[in-house]
Amino acid sequence: MSDKPQFSDAYTTNVVEATEILFEKAIYSVPEVPYSTVSNAFETLKRSWGSTGLVEGNKEKVKKYIFANLKTLSQESGFRQFKVTTYGNNSAQISIITAKGFKAVRVWRCENKYIACGDEYFKKKKWWQFWK
View 1 (cartoon, rainbow, N blue to C red):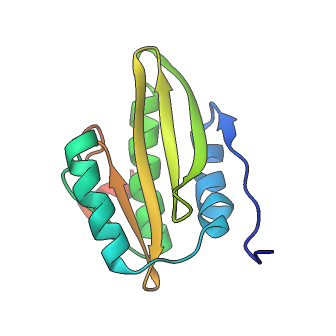
View 2 (cartoon, one colour):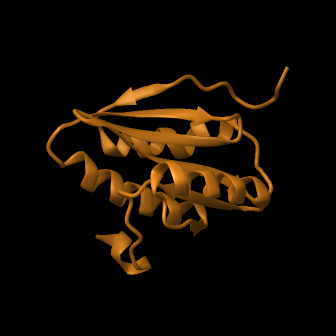
């Protein structure tokens, strides 16, 4: 039996709650991975999601990046809910469920940092923009 905490999918319409579930529960139910795992996943996500880059840093930096994007996306017309899940037994993911489908961001714990990869709708911002 694994010593990792079990995690079941969670649904919410609250951006703060979705972010907290991702960073306090879901991400800790999967193991840390080597950078090669993230790099390989990124190559796949570039093709399937239109991802343009990775955001790397400590927990707070990556959390602020995700929160800022979730907040913006949840205010768009057609927003329904967030789904927080684990993916491939090596990452956690938030999907933004909309009337037309979904948008997503995936997070890994890797080499004592956090790495996020969002689909084409997730925008990179300068570090100071995360405080807004």
